[in-house]
Length: 322
Image (cartoon, rainbow, N blue to C red; front, side):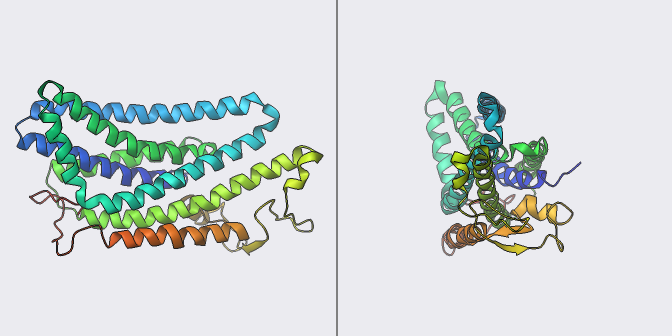
């Protein structure tokens, strides 16, 4: 059984889950401070419903993929890689936006949540629904990004989903350690490390997305003479070739094959390919220079100048993720 495909979704769900756990923990702490612990059940209900909604979104995506594939069976070999490519692009966009935007907004996290909870509590009869909605949105937002990533790798079977469940369980355990048992964790460093891993994972997803589109176009080109001209690059005298990705720039199949350990781990986590083509290499480097550069610049503004780093688990609860 190959567990390597579960690693990327585990990392992504762990990071997203810890972020959601922070929101849940802050809300529970604020309710306790306001002597409104009676609303805790609304918090737990929001978490439960959010997880169910995220799972249903995943089922919906799987259903859409199956319907589109069954609609034109002769084009299944074209539709499936094309959909994987589309979902990969959506996952790249969502995860990149989340990574940069949330890092910039980290300093306002507690203040934003506190304002939302205070507003909900002032509405008396609707306070429970207000708290429920806040938690539901937080969980679904993080869950949706994971669902997109799993959908982009739906041909890999059940393992990506198991990785997501493992990440969710671990994130929940971290939330309990922070807010229930008061364990001190430097959450700022945690998010920085996870952020760097996420940049590399999404950069690998760029490589995978380009390969999916190449496979889709290649299969379409083979389907009829009318479409064979779609492959504007094709090496006729080599076994290794691409349709739209240009010439091969790296071949490490004899040194580090991507279907054997440890290459398969690098492939699952960071998009490593033993055969790398020019367009993939350019896309990978361009992503690291743009999104990676923006992320590292956003780290400089993640916490106000002169603010002391207080690990989570100490009081008062920090207004940032650190």
